[in-house]
Image (cartoon, rainbow, N blue to C red):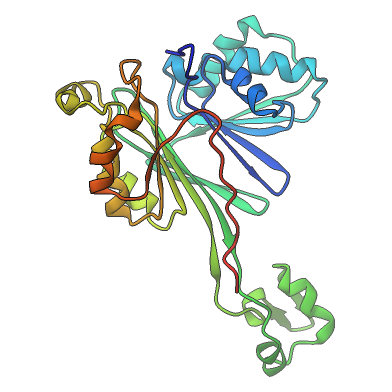
Length: 291
């Protein structure tokens, strides 16, 4: 539930002019406005699952987008049933000046490619169908002039190949890998709420620059409750981060009873040192590694 000092959990990812929101519970658009951000330019909204605290803010968000005279299409991604759930919520937001496309996840793991990045959805373990998400920005290798010359590729094609284009001239086909070195490290952020610890979460978090994960309970006596309701303790989230080898972990999605999550961080950090009890509005800019 939203509290006077804490909003519901959601994540905004921004890359190269694109904005991707994950989950949209009650008050999400207010949290955005507190940050100084507008809902209008959101391109994609992903949903982990259809419990109210993760989707009940959608009708208001859509109406605000419409009132801002948005006309660009909006893509929604979520587990099976997305179209039905969205249509039900739109009873109170029936007329919008922009089209909505619903893309339903049908596999335990599914990847969606967009210009310059991809979104990977992976099934986790909650008491309803629920998915975690990774946003991945791949980075191709540097242009290798020696390689291009050795392959006898005309110089006029170098720029197009470097940009990822495959070109056929006469009887020869030229591909980007013929002029590029090995792929460089890209960027990856993994987000998971409402789940027990799972191997799929560990596997999908491997290689991430940041793992944002629920730490529903900090009180040591709440493990039984976490198992019963298919949630994770702060200590279990720290174990996931340690197993995945991520450089940093943000804890989120706290129980309403967890008033001061920072009080439990001393023990959490014994399991995973670079863990943070995240608060509303926390942001981080990730950059490509320097050459």
